[in-house]
Image 1: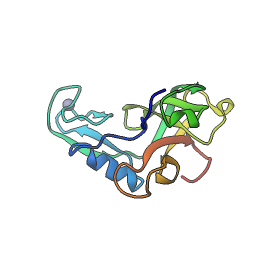
Image 2: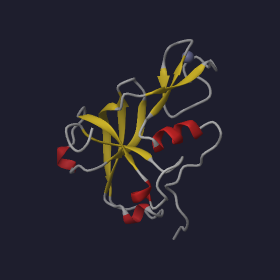
Image 3: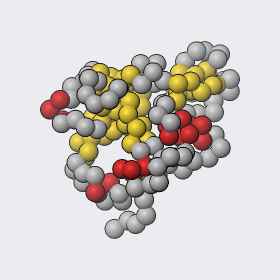
Image 4: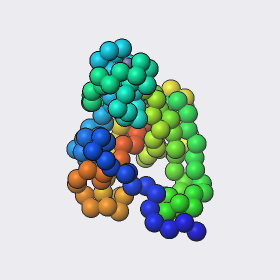
Length: 148
Ligand SMILES: [Zn+2]
């Protein structure tokens, strides 16, 4: 069996603003000043035109569900304690497609295109101390449920 933890981000100087923002409840994406296209996950160069004129931008937090899969078995700690959970790919309102997790929702409530809102798994349920970079991970819930 694997040991250690496989759910913690590896934060470096480039990604630190992303994790700092997440810890404050904001989802950041990157947008190219040359071609205007937004992307996610964050890269130092625009994946469309390879410009390095790319800035952080706060995403509005709205997305629609592109696809999902309910995970019933995962040997990598700590995911084994979380099964079943819903791994998903969502389309952010700004355009980028993002891998994430759908929370607080029965699978029967999910359908392709359902409206989602970003939420953040915080230190309390990641087992990490609350606050600080890397201690919140963006997840999504179905719009109209929970706090928006
Ligand atoms: Zn570009």
